[in-house]
Image 1 (cartoon, rainbow, N blue to C red):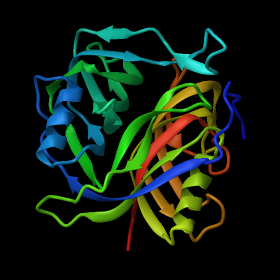
Image 2: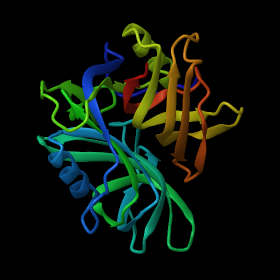
Image 3: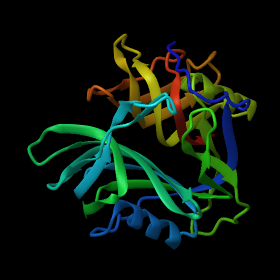
Image 4: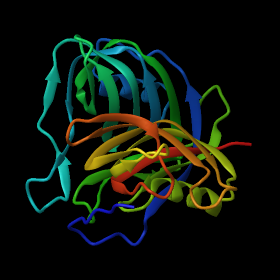
Length: 288
C-alpha cells in the first residue's frame, strides 16, 4: 500500500467516529441559488447542522471547481489546482457531498463527475459558493442529529478538515431517525480496513455507507487496475460493509476518482491497498 509523508506530526487518533442519528429524505434541491445556499436551506428546514448526500443528474451553471495537484511549497504534501470555471451547464453524472460548519457558518465539501456542454467528461472538487443549481438532480440526503461535521485544523496535513463533533441536538422530524455514526479517517490508513475496524469496535456487523468524500494515495481497484498518479480526489458512489469477513475484505466501495494528471476513473476499491491521502469523511449506517 502506498503512503504519503505529511509535514506535521501524525495524530495519535487515526480516525474520529461520533455517534449520531440520521434522517433520510429525498427532497427537491432548490434551483437558482448556489449549491451551498441550497443545502443550507434544506438543513435549516430540518433543523440539522450537518448532512451527507448523493446527487445524480441535474446540472450546475455556472460552476467553478478545483482539482487535486502537487504542492508548490513544503507547507503541504499535496494541494489544489488553480480555479477552473464552466459558463455552460455541467450535467452531473454522480456526486457525493458533506454539509457541515466552518467558523460557525454552513460549508460544503463536494466531489463529482460531470459532462460539460460539449459532452466532455470532467471531475473535481466543486466550489460550493461558486456553483449554481440550474436543474435539480436526484437527491438522497441524510440529515445528522447529535453530531456535526465541523472544519477543524489538522496539524498532520496542514489543512483544515471536516471532523465529527458531538452537538447534543435532539432529532426533529416526521420520520424516526436511525442510529449511525459520522466518521473521518486520517492519512495513511487503509480506507476499507478503517471502516471495518470502526464497525467491529462498535459491534456493527453490516452497514451502508452514506455520502463519502475524500482522497487516496493513488488508487488500487479490485479488478487489478491502478491509478498511478498519487494525488487524487475520490467520492463514494455506493458502499456496503460486512464486518464478519477478515480485515477490510467485507467493505465494498464503488468510487469515482480524479487524479492530478486529470485522469478520471471509476471502480471498486481493493481492500488493504488504498491509503487515505489527506482525509476521508462519511456516515456509516448500521443495518439489521
